[in-house]
Structures are given as structure tokens and as C-alpha cells.
Image (cartoon, rainbow, N blue to C red; front, side, top):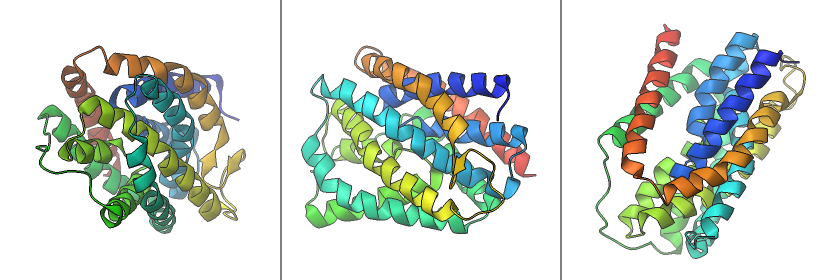
Length: 267
């Protein structure tokens, strides 16, 4: 059982994850994964499973935060359910595959992969790189392929996929607020499929800590969800009221610091 200090940390990061999920449509996992990595390390959980547990638990929290987030966006008419329906089949296949691949890889490799991803996202946010709207949403085959790629990568880095789907939809001439709202909805099937995958691939691992179901660590899940469900709707309100570009740059600096700290710990 985690000490009181760890419970408080889970609650604090849950607040941040919820706001970020609603604000940027990214599910909050981009904050939760590095936070859980450091917290699990501090708790002395098995080092060979720490990244898989951080990824799986992060996706489990996104199941809840995505619901709170997309409901808030949907009330403002900012969710394209036709896009959600067309991309979901590929998302499910890619997510199951991503969870399986992550379970086969070492913690060190997954950490390195996640650090590279964090640097990519951070630089993209700081430079405010946006794809030029130059095409329309592809057909069934194109959406299935896109969904598969999004699900695969998202489950290997424990996120809701918004850092990929928002630029994709912007590229396809979808307004940014609608792209963010739709991405928050797409995060649900990504996370739900990923959770099933991380549970299935973690079952039978004898050295996992108590209060775990597969690679899902229940105390962290409970603590983060307890606050993220409350704050996600406020993040959605901010997305429709504040200059998101400025907030993204501040958030990107925070991600750079987290990525650098994780990179340093590898050596």
C-alpha cells in the first residue's frame, strides 16, 4: 500500500492530467506516464516492469478522463462522431498490437522511446508547428490505416493519441476546437483497448506488486482518476476561452524538463 505522500502525489497529478486532457485533447497521459515512472521508481516497484506499469496505468486513467473531457466538448458541439466511428476499428486493432509490443520490450527501451516522443511533442508545441489544411478526411481504408497507426503508437507511449489525431484532423481541414474535442473522444477506444491488452499481457507475472491487475496499478489509478474526472471539464472550458498557443508553449517547457530528467536517469 502506498504511503500518504504517494497518494497525495497521485491526486495532484490527476488534477493536472484532467486539465490537460480537456484543454489539449491529449488524454493527460503525456504527463501521467513520466509522473508514474518517477513515483513507481521512488516506491521501489520492480524496475523491469516500471514502464509497462506506467503505460498501462496511464491508459486506464484515460478511460475515465476521456469520458469527462469529450462530454464537456460534446455539449459545445465540438465532437465529430462520424470521424470517431470511422477511425475506431483501426484504433482497436492498433491498440491491442501496441500493448502486446510494449509488453515484449524492456523498460529501458520503452523509456528511451517515450523520451524521444516527449522531445518531439515538446518541440512541435514550442514552435507551434501546424500542418497546413490541405486535404479532406480520407475514406474507409485510409481511416482504418490511420487508426491502426495511432492506436499502435499511443499504446506504446501510454497516451490518448491527441498529439497525433489533432494535427491529423487539422491537416484535414477540421477546425482546431473540433479536432481537440474529437480527439478527446477517440482517446476512449485507444485507452479501453490498451487497458485490456496491458491486463492480458501482465497476468501471470509473478513479481508484479500487490494491488495490481496485470500491468495496471490500482492505487495510482484510483488516486489519479479521483481528481482528473473533476478537472477535465474545466480544461475543456479553458480550451474554448483561452489562447491555447501560449498555454501549449508553457506546457511544452514542462515536458522538456520531464524528458530531460528521464533521459538523465537512463545514464
